[in-house]
Image 1 (cartoon, rainbow, N blue to C red):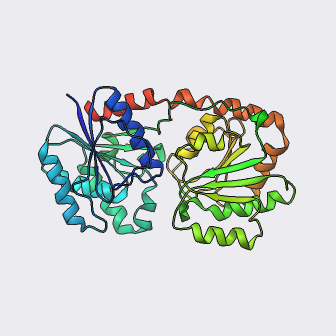
Image 2: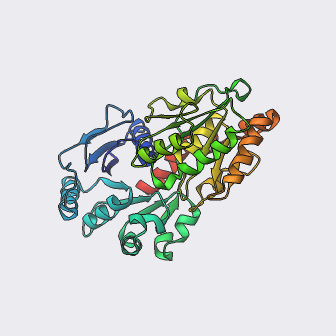
Image 3: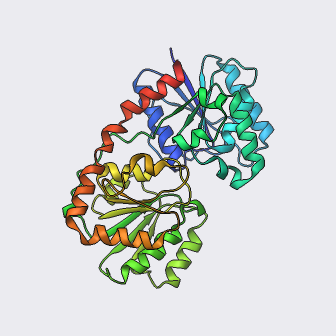
Length: 352
């Protein structure tokens, strides 16, 4: 029987966690024995199949990295036939180190730009480039991310885009209300001040529009302060992460994402699959440009490009024909990134 052990700090929400939940559920449906080992805490936002075993024995916030490496090694020793899969920056490094001289196949997945790992620390970037050479397989989200590594790593790697959830509610842009949405972590990477300042300028000529942001994170306080400073408390709403995000956004008119850097944004591809006209920054490491054909199925804007953001928002708001064309073209991503097609690619990495 095929067996996979996923190593994650937690499942508390976010893009990587969402991808892992989709992968695990689909692998179980295909008859794979799946275990999820949590190393930080037991927060689980996404629905997991009842046949997935959740191992909480080695959880601990702020645990010494050496202890965590030894704990992962214990998990490997319990069953050397399990393929071990890790997502997220430091978790990848700990898992590779734990797997040295072990029989388990180790697969790591990089979710962001190399230069952004460890909050931009060169030491973490160098260590990542070296240790990835010891993984059995590496999964990247974009071609640009793959090119940042050595030929040795590239030869044993694959570029796999994120899978989309299977079910989307019906969306008709012609019936949408004057609402703009963003759903993401509230951290510096997402550069939400750009989105808020852009909306502030847009709102001067489109006063009947509202902006709703879904998410949690360390920048929440500063974001709330900025909204207050701009006097936008009555037209910008900050909500928590939502388990039913599609139901919450299915009447919105457009989606915006203003990240300074990004792998393959789950929120972007999910908004597009629903049919929401989307505006995203063309940021490193190239995830947006892999799925958005500018002006055809969405809009790409420069990193930090407030003027371009406002222009694109006005184009979607003022041009019904543009909205409909982009919405219809964006929905085509559902087939390209279906769970079935993406998990087929993951199975090739895991078991071949």
